[in-house]
Length: 338
Ligand SMILES: O=C(O)c1ccc[n+]([C@@H]2O[C@H](COP(=O)([O-])O)[C@@H](O)[C@H]2O)c1
Ligand SMILES: Cc1cc2nc[nH]c2cc1C
Image (cartoon, rainbow, N blue to C red; front, side, top):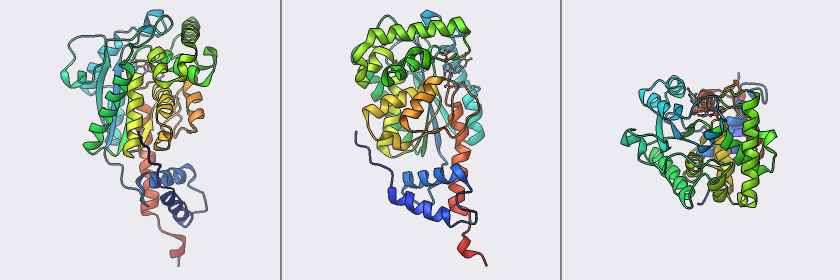
């Protein structure tokens, strides 16, 4: 997996151009940095329009739900897949606001009767309960990773110029916490949050589950595919593959919340340098996301206190990116002042 870095020359050219625009130096703050980032990604100043934004929601069940780690029952995952298809999920509504499209992919939903368009990339039903057993059978992590790469390829071949990973999986904040803790050597207590809204006892069960999972896994977690097998899920592996393939194809990716942050930490280990193609769309309320983003050197664009997942935070960063591009494309220069 060869990652070509974004263009340093285009970034420099963009920074020089930004300094010459009709504004005090640096006065457009983060927008300037994002404009330069996009210029580097597109190797063009100004960058091209972000007019084909695709959200891929990775849906799957997570066996750790057996340990009462969520405020909601496992069955919500399959039910929500139908809501995505009906076009009334949170991310779908928010995506319509910015003209982005949303597709849902069943990687490991433990339910029958979902349509073929959703199940084409299915790897398995559910996952092992990570406190007691591996999440995945040997080989499944790499199959799911490849599925995520193929999902990204299909969207890019179809014209996508910005990719967003979404997630739907009751219990997946516990899995995200385990993946991040294992990679960064952090204790469970520091990474576990309240997810969908568990109380103190629920959070204590999550801490116990992550602690047991880390103890069970030991050094195996050093290898990214072993980490996905032991502590992840088909959705985590597929999301990592999706992120890597965006980087391989040179298409920018906006990360969403805690699950894509945890997957990104794995993906960067599989394909060092891939992080150069990713932005962090928003800050989640989950502590493991903050740890993952810090380790990746990514600063969230928005901080709206969101904890929905699905890609809902990332889609709201899209207008900010478009604004950054417009600054470079449309502002006049100080040199032209009469
Ligand atoms: O991305 C986030 O910041 C986020 C924070 C809390 C919950 N979620 C969503 O809620 C589900 C997981 O929460 P939980 O409590 O079941 O682990 C899953 O479907 C996620 O998309 C997402
Ligand atoms: C209803 C519901 C919708 C979600 N979307 C992402 N995670 C979710 C969790 C619940 C409970």
